[in-house]
Image 1 (cartoon, helix red, strand yellow):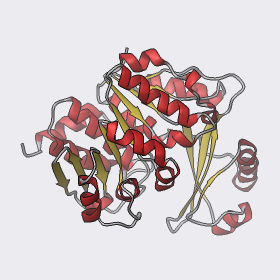
Image 2 (tube, helix red, strand yellow):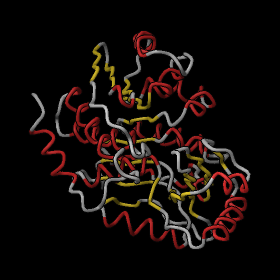
Image 3 (cartoon, rainbow, N blue to C red):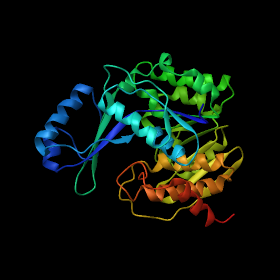
Length: 338
């Protein structure tokens, strides 16, 4: 039995430095995002190999998986639920989970390809992302381990999982219903403005019933019916007219939270990011761990900001394995005002 169960993508990212000419030859524009079929990704992989030779290995990823990795390494019993293929990368992913004390709950599926993405980086910092859902698209209610959900103390649901495949929304809804019936609170991430808008009915139903929703300012704005460019003041006002508890990240402007009638705004130190991928995932992990350990909401926001500041200084969505997260959090808490 694990204390926290996280449902999300099983995926890996490969960072590849690329020239604008090479990117154009692949048929993509800088600063774009593309969801492709497995066949399309394999064709692109082969072209990248012909351009650059052997490619770097995948980094273990997935938004909620990054959060779960942080939680497990912070000393909280945590399990990851998601669909991977029983291929070389899926097997490596499951083994990697063991090395960080993260329990991999779901079985790997024979004949399926584990999802992955390419981060194609230009020298000027612009990035193009290519992603294939792979086995994630097979997510369905029948592949959910209900017992693990019922025995958990907290469930983390990746809003991005709604968009994996034809039965994904039914699977995420099933998880929320099982948790509610077992009186297990759940946290719902917003994933992207497109997903919030595309699955409006789901979020209208479950966001008010979640222990909290978590996302960035643009995602929170769309959740409450505003334009993505809405200001924090407008989002605060809109949230106040709902029963939604929310934690909202704002990059260099820190983080905001609303729980019941109480609001919290926690600024952060401005740091020029080397790579911002994973900042929100690890912020959420630090916030959850802090709350489970009895810290106040304001302290938890501050620790989330602190952890995010570490992630954006490296080219990885997870802190290095030689980083002792429990010691890192203790040191941060010692210097934090009560």
